[in-house]
Picture 1 (cartoon, rainbow, N blue to C red):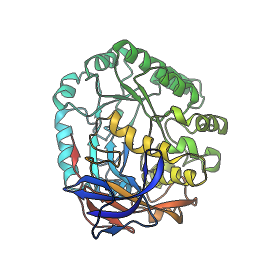
Picture 2: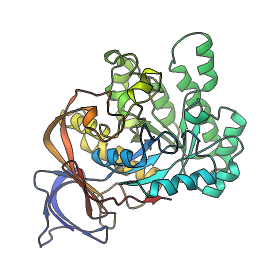
Picture 3: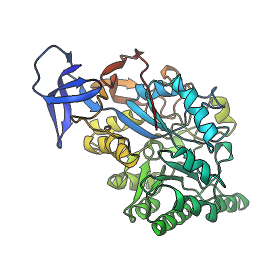
Picture 4: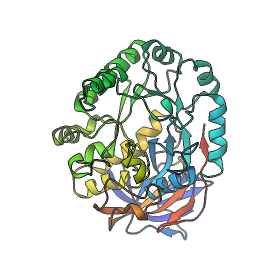
Length: 405
């Protein structure tokens, strides 16, 4: 495949180049003769990577499954996603992990990797699987995946491959129970205590730690005090005002913070290492019943690209946090950058296209969005995975997703 007149971000600036892809790999970037696909009018960016999604298959398919979730990912510009282990039956054993892979292989449209669940007494299972990363929930989650015991948590921090990240949901269960008894809302102190506890163990063990959906500046600064600490931003903690959402919709963990906290996060964007959508689809019925989380795969990149068009964030920040850094942190080789020798994973963004977020028109089974009605500028209109067009103008053309191990 030859992509001609591609406006790409290279060495700090936008330049027009041709891109030759052979056998799924970018072979050459520059002046290349021959017939090819004309990318005039588009920004051609590397396929994005979302390190934090909940695809819901394995027991809650009515909310989302591997097919609908990965189609949502592609429409959102993501060619790679990493799925969380807190399924109805949590992925904490080798057997369940293999079952999940077997089910996913038949359905996925983009590439998918799996976080593995750290639980009490499953050190041998972790070693047997040898996953890309280990996920520890310090507060209760779907499937009762909770590891608040310091001893059990410490054993995982000590035993798991130090070169790979341990991902933590940083809300301390003890603090959450205390707040429940005191009849107060889920306050930021639960995040602060969990971050301090997890960082202290990680520092002692001299290991990588990745804190998901960081929602306060205090937690963010603490994470970045540690050279092997990585902090993830979630779009909803930056773009959503909980006061403007119906009460039954705004539930998410960690909760949406006030406008002052959101402004502080925006002022310190440079401290974040990645963006994770925390795509957590639920039906509206489930939301009214108290389910926590938002669908976000189809809006995550588009929100930040719209912010780029409004000069709130630069393109380098977006590409670093949504492609290059996730690949580096999670050891996903030859991804996240448009470079010779890297995978031919590209997305074509029409910067002039304006569109309105409408949940009913999205690919997620949730069929709603907390950003409903927002007008955004910039739209992913074409996706290439390993040198083949898999999505164009809203139509899915070819299923090429593979499981990452």
